[in-house]
Image (cartoon, rainbow, N blue to C red; front, side, top):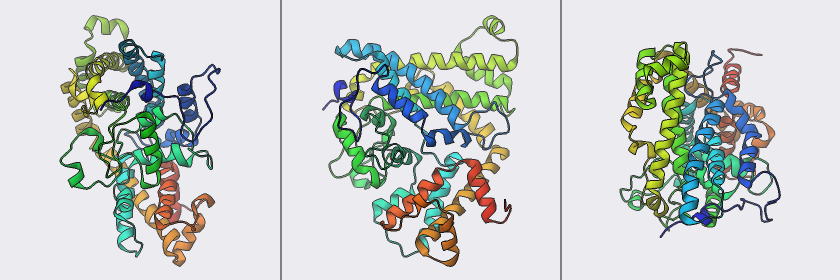
Length: 439
């Protein structure tokens, strides 16, 4: 079985039956990008952790800036492969359509992330597990797995297809290709080992949608013809362009984290220059001509390195296109790049010098405490009805206080609220609740 580009690039939208206005100066995929830009969850990324929580330096990247940078790299990757794919298959699309789909999906790739980055995800998971042990609330194993393994990717799909622009069917009503390219892990949270049968492809490393949106993703998958890997569970092969979304993210954070680490003084200029130039391949004379300070040299090398990686990853994608269309290929594109070793060294340097630095770890610990406690407190408020819990319920915005729903849906309301917070909002709320600050 093979996926077909004509279906993979359909212009149809989730939740919208009327035909797209093709007379507009903007294509349907450009409209996807614009809808994401103007959404509230996207704006809140300005105050969400990338690597450094609540950074004091204006230079350092937030999730918002990271997402915009990833979208730029994704647009370049998509357009590059688009030219060749259109020529190979005689498609009636523009190369820019590929770039616009990948760019929109990249722009949204972190839109579901809670405050404090991956520490925030861990905190919500831990908060749920601790709270769930103390209650008689009963969830089935699929519902329980959604919270035990709480995933920002699934929250992002929920935001775009359900939470935003309520009560409109399909939420933001993005196109099927953008939603599929966004979903790097097209599977539900709980799949029995006997069904996975030892499968270790990259697309099953996490999951991409909650039980509440499972049918919505099934609609997306059916409409564009994703290959279903099992009829027993919700599990599909990736949309080929999802690999470019992943690659754009990989390129940005591995290269840019070195730049930010150097800017903050965690990574020496010499080491940052060595790592970036192993990809950029820039002569000393050229570097001196292009930049007049250490900071400017690192910026220049970062730009050159990203450009080299875009070219390399696009070539790999085109070489592996047949395997991508059959679902046989399921690895990160950057891991088979000719620069894979250098990228691994960039990641190792960042982990050793930045991610595990006490300054960074202490903020992650604080974020872990903040979100774990907030989850437990609000869960008590919505579901346990204690005197303290009722006060917490009163603190919830009205849209998160619906009690005429299943326990699963009520817990989702809590994760919706908490994951939508910014770092600052969550921190200030926690301080108020703990009596550290009363105004």
